[in-house]
Image (cartoon, rainbow, N blue to C red):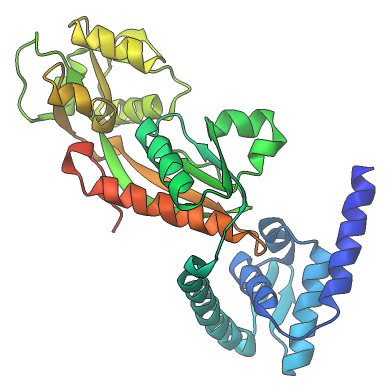
Length: 328
């Protein structure tokens, strides 16, 4: 049944591709093929049946009266005319997206459903404030927020179709456009009951501390392990702990230290319950990405929520106590 549906959809796409003049969608498809250097790869990335993609390219060639792609054993490459069209198309697509951004605020009552997935290591304040702001500004938009994108992707196809994703550990999925937003770094977190450390320490000092760390499946633990390996040091792990609250409580009690982003403990640091020390090791930096559905038919509701979320994250990054820096 599913195979039959896919075949029907592919035929419908071919039918649509065979009619009409050059449009934004065709330019997106052409640029996608040029960047992927393969019709089959572009088909997967653009979520368009390969036969339909071929029809779009042939229509462009027929309309412009020029050959745009050379086919070879390894895929495709743009001809001189194709290179020139690609340059124009990229600029036109940027202008189109800017126009869409500029006019989207004029929507009288934006509505629709938006599924936002948020990685577990993203501070909860991001999702909470985003939901609050969207509710006030766009009351007709139904915003659904799910935590733990990787787990949902593996278990549920519905969540795999998220409209927006915020995560430090993005999985490469062709249906998304990736944008790096901010960078944070992991710091040593310890109890004021222990002697005060310098504001900045080297990794060798960290390796001498007794640590509570998340289990090996976590991206944060992998970063710490890679940093230890690069420094040629073994870590003293008191226990593996996947609960942030339990880890926080044990560190406050002075049982052991931990390594985590300052955003996770900023309130405790301000209250004097915990202290932090910056670690001199670039491997302990993470980048927060926003993923957006690449579908050309995405709703204005998705764009509105994306803009609100992006603005919020960059606003947070201006607060030095949060430990985030905007990606240059």
